[in-house]
Image (cartoon, rainbow, N blue to C red; front, side, top):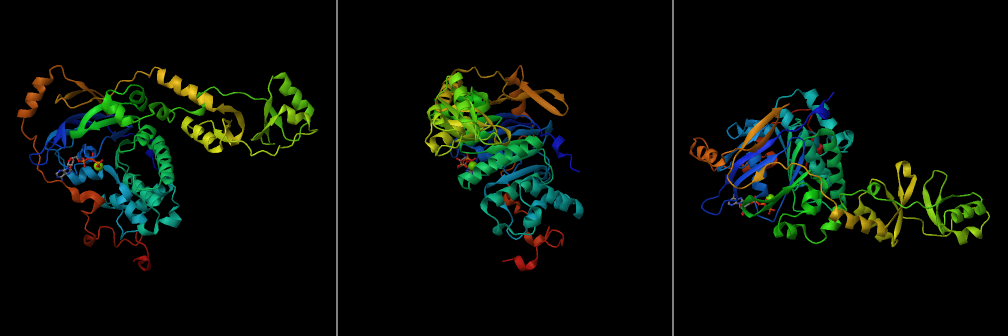
Length: 463
Ligand SMILES: Nc1ncnc2c1ncn2[C@@H]1O[C@H](COP(=O)(O)OP(=O)(O)OP(=O)(O)O)[C@@H](O)[C@H]1O
Ligand SMILES: [Mg+2]
């Protein structure tokens, strides 16, 4: 029913945007930033550098002091802010759910405001709960406090996606959950994004999260100054300056392991030995392969242990030596997961498995170390980086193909800038719409959702 898999996000362009609070140095100063359609762009940088401010200027929860925001070619800086926000999904820490509404009602909030009919809202709500791995039958009628932190965060993501907005803004959405839940939520977001291709702007202070989730990373310094804008690979391989190096922290090479997969490195092939087979035949195969050890496979070709030639020579049929088993990693695991598995198992090697756990080969700590060395010397693929700077120069739209607009810098930026600064309508009121946070502009007393029997939980569940 939903054609959401075809929908791509929208290009976002911040044009020379500044946000000042009073006479202090601007929180964001002359920021020009292009966010490509259908991609995930991560904002990272030290506390107070203007990440949240920049994010909230995109949906105008914070009004820019000057500058312009263009979404898919449309200047949204003066459109009605509430209408704009209904077209942009917004996810904040801890989900930002309304506690007095059920999970279903929370997810259906924006569709309800958009006056969808009840049946359509109900279907959409169930579809989205399903998408974020919450069984609608179980969770639809619960209240937020009856959910774990990770589950609440999932509902927050589902709510942001409800009206199928092309743009999703996420402000440290996974900051408040434990590391394991966080990892799961990150992986879910990767899957959701592979399906939906939204434009996602995601604030995090965790550089590893940025590497894991981002197509692009913007590294901000104070005042919303862009220190580097590039792919995770580019930034890790070629940090633009000392600030970026410090920000990445030690072990850029290790972080690159988060980008490389086990299937991308050379595996070792050890001879395989089947449980229950003739031990002498197996020993011969090892001798022919000049191997002193083999991998024991069960009847489903899954690795269950190592076995030495010496051991085999003492057996008639192959049985599992009393070993601790064999650490295994999937071929699509990242190299840092593989390294982790080996270190935890106290082993210098692990068996690599493919579909259904079938044996594929062996990876060793040495292979991983060589991969790190290789990675840091590997040429990073040339990709054209979107526009991003704080020079006050304004880009011009050059192509508008299939609704996707690309930008490049005008020939005469200075002239443009002068025109820009002297033109009218570039100023906005200081009235930030902080209250939109948590959608709390919806006064519960107005009962936007409350009386809908299809959306409401049973009264007895209320606190
Ligand atoms: N309402 C406000 N009034 C005055 N100054 C503000 C206001 N909101 C934010 N600032 C200032 O603007 C700057 C940028 O704040 P912002 O919230 O965007 O930072 P951030 O990068 O999101 O930081 P964090 O990582 O801590 O969330 C900070 O110096 C902050 O003190
Ligand atoms: Mg912030």
